[in-house]
Length: 347
Image (cartoon, rainbow, N blue to C red):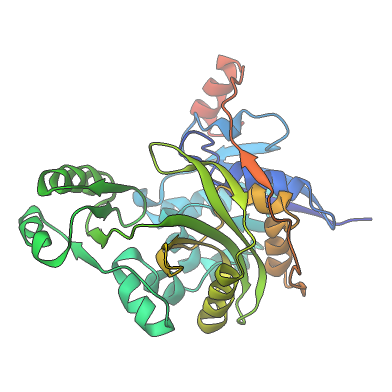
């Protein structure tokens, strides 16, 4: 008889800027070696994953980490008293630090996590990416952090336009002149704070790799893909798996050198001269994870096994040419569901 685990998952906002929660849950429900009870953790009461059928078994609203880590942890402890959570899988960059810092506290109440170390998380920040590249021997575009508008006038002396303007957690815009940099700086800093990162724009094809490291330098899974359809927010709405050995080699070397622990996504630009520049390292499972599952690597299932201390053999292959296409779908619910979640924080 297969064991059954209670797994709490964040990131249920399956919109045009989707979180990874729903595809992670879909992958876990297809796990071969265990059954699951899924506890959805929602920040907003209109996250679509709350209302989708056969996704969560129970949903709890939780406070944003910005409210304070103590309040978030108190809420998690309350939920755990009712649900006896075995594994917690956070899926947003902005919440990871709180959960990494609370790793031992969570373990004391029986909740297991498998997250990067704080050092791993900090050193791959967009503002630190150039140092990261030098340390680990990977190509990174030139970038600079700015914290106020007065610094924008100097960009023309250090960069050629266009440049990428990026938030420290999310959002990236292509700016062709100082006026656009100013506009995007204001937009990003209002949402995510400073610094805002100015990054050299590398011309080429964007490719991505989802990967899972065991914390000892071994790559448990890795699947590269190319975006085929991109939304105005820069998110993949369609993609296809690639048979690019160079991408796999870059990923495996990086995981070996950093001893990366947990899921990750590499965002890479491949130039017409076949040079590969890492433009971002996301320290968690990406929203397109279900493509990897469809290609033969159930990375969320392997992540849960690692979390619970099991020995996990690396995936040996994946299907090349597998595609995913997202679509919108009208969910019909009842106002009573919304009211109950809003009033009680549970559904």
